[in-house]
Image (cartoon, rainbow over all chains, first blue to last red; front, side, top):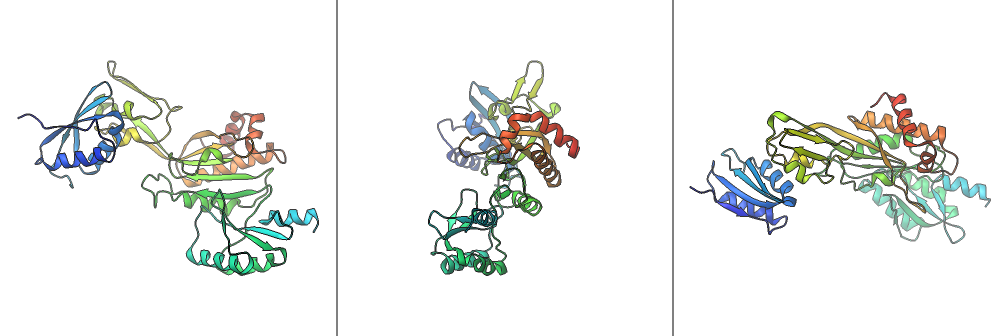
Length: 78
Length: 291
């Protein structure tokens, strides 16, 4: 099964955060979501993911665009 | 009234106004914090002795303008029971400013109001060669503009890198606002330049693997800043201090240095132009034993 991809390279905070949250809602733990985002969204997206108990399990990049593999952990609070 | 008389009044926070016989009364406020009964007393005082106006100063102070000279001592007595004292002016340690700090602000690293209270208790109104301002920011977002003060403090997070957990994803390097992190994934190296690091902790917050960690969180001291006619920014001295007691010791030592080397009517920044910052650092380190 291919992993769903969420592209938020065209969004700015707080929509980056909102879209990642909504994207994760579609997934049953311990499912994964790929998030494609710009450098400037990294800090807020990753810190909110961590705060809600999810994990970033892989990171790759194409220049200033990052691709995060996010695992929705079963113990996640939201 | 004689010039000497005015000077004495000014030292006690009574500022002569443009219009003869009227004074703007400066009040003692620490870190911009007042309890509601104090605010009510200030309101009543402004109505009773001034013209129902209150001036909020640029450094979190409060003044009651338009007070006639013969009301000054009555006004002082009126405010005293509410715990509102009058302020200071002249060559003294001035209002200690602070943000709300880590007890209120989600970004806060240190309890800035707590340190402000301590500095105020120890130093407010104490004589120095020229006015001396202390400002305390709870984090490096620096709402209190540490570098504009003769002595400024910022809450600071110092990162350290744990190689074993790192997969060299490059996120810390990308999020670092001061380009203090350089990764050479090929040779498994990552370097944090402590001179460039601004202590924000963004690398720690963003690290997915938990390999960027806190080395220390605490207080960073800046010295020699001022505004006025010829503004200049303070520069940081010493390493990250761990406790408010250490921060307090450092400030006391900085002030001692100013007392030794400062000339009357010379701001600390100008004193440091003469002595250089290394002399200050050496003095403070020797005095406090801090690094």
